[in-house]
Amino acid sequence: MLTVNNKVKQLNQYWTDIYFHLHYAHKEKISHQVVRILQLIDKKEEVGVNEIASYLQVSQNTASEHVKRIIEKNFLTKERDLLDERRVVLRLTDLGKDVLHRNTSLDEEKLEQILNQLEVNEKEVVEQAFKILSERAKTCL
Image (cartoon, rainbow, N blue to C red; front, side, top):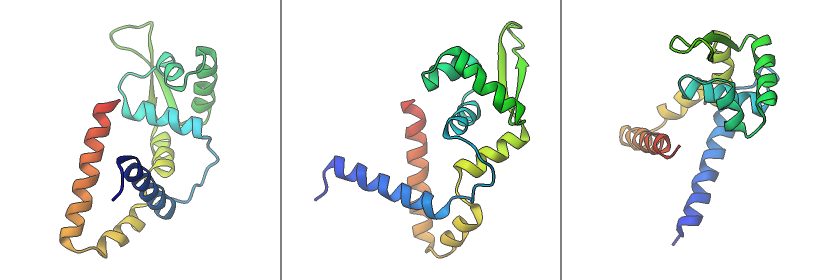
């Protein structure tokens, strides 16, 4: 019988296997740090440089330099906060959304091929499991 710790390790192994076999081929050179910044902006509302610095545990100057380079690549834009003109909010561009998708998501064609091989009840189990994990993950952050 597996302990909770071993189940966690096994689940992590399943996840890394899934991602390894089903991820998109990466087209652009992009650092893990940039991916994390794009994810933060995608998943949270009203993200500015301070939030990025805190999330990455780096100085505000370092976070600002990261943001500057990402803007130069046309992955992000800056906008003034409508409620507080002093505050700058970062938004993903369409290109930034595409880059983020290719660097964090499963290849939908590969995933569809796998799902087509499953029985109806297996598809439901997989969908329900991912839904539950997604919902619970959102509450722990």
